[in-house]
Image (cartoon, rainbow, N blue to C red; front, side):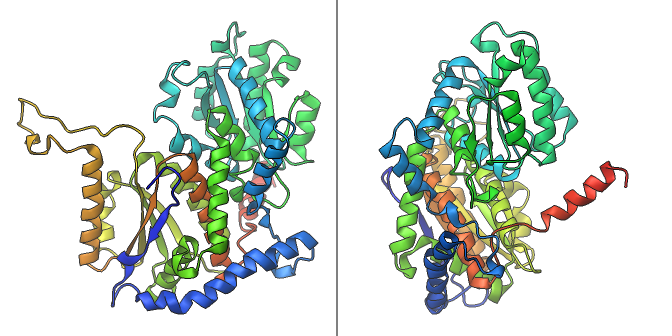
Length: 471
């Protein structure tokens, strides 16, 4: 694969006469998949544009699909005034003024940025010197829980004493469409108070706060009152878990030095593939078709995303939210589960090999690693009996583990599929994020579930507010 290759999807590990599917099953499902594709590409787009949205499709947060092409086109037309131009300028400002940035957000306002950092940055990014980080700030995530010790620990690390140099200065990126999410709102109050002390004034602190929010709401009003110089939008028609390729994910990504143009180009390439490829060659439709058939015909209602790189764990956790919130409705929806291998082979493999036959395993593997292959190495101390593997690299050991696990699962009729990424980089992850978002919408249309909105989430929030109000 070249660095600009498309990712690939191979479902053949699930072809099994008793426990999997027949390849012809995918062929028979193709007309239904095509109808779901057309509903997303044609009907959803028309209804969203006209605002004539049927009740059963409300909300219709379909704007995520065209967003990569829209942002790229606007940037090409106006390098400075476009949203991407402003994001890059703001990232450059933060890079020049601070050494740490705290990203406050939860759910879709947090998990995408975390996935981008872990997926594309050096694994120990925050431990690198400022020079080795390319002058980019360290990145910390808070406001994604109401954990006293986590918040206090970060506040202690940042300190509130007056900053005397770039190395002492820090900034806040706060992400919330409404500003009403308790976890993020509380964190912003606490961290902004600390930032005021560090900078010496509210005016100085406001220059180091960048909100990503709606065009109205509590956070919009608060950031206006504070005097924040720059605000970025959470776009209309884009739900939180579909917002990773908006300013929600792009601003933190730019701050950490990632190539957000290439990220969007990867997503745009996946859009074009989804629009034009035939069902038998379409990675999105093959992915949806296999998952749907395994759930409907074999009861595989647990979808295990087995990532074979630690850098992809947060990508899996991002997908957990995407799938669970989108399709977990009307007593339906598969349960997502992310595992990191080979680590989790030492905790879950027993159940996966001999437990209930209720799982579909999708391996996410890399065609190319970030660093040169590290060999086991020869030693004059061979009590560990590893000299026989001395010339093998960690990459080769990982490949053998993938192949061996698939072989063991196949022998016992455990269905697998392989999703291969060209690399763990902006191009590949742009494709993967867009592929999984499209696939989730297509599956929703296929089974008659609105993939947008999350009405069930509001119930715990309402109950919690009653408790806090003493009712």
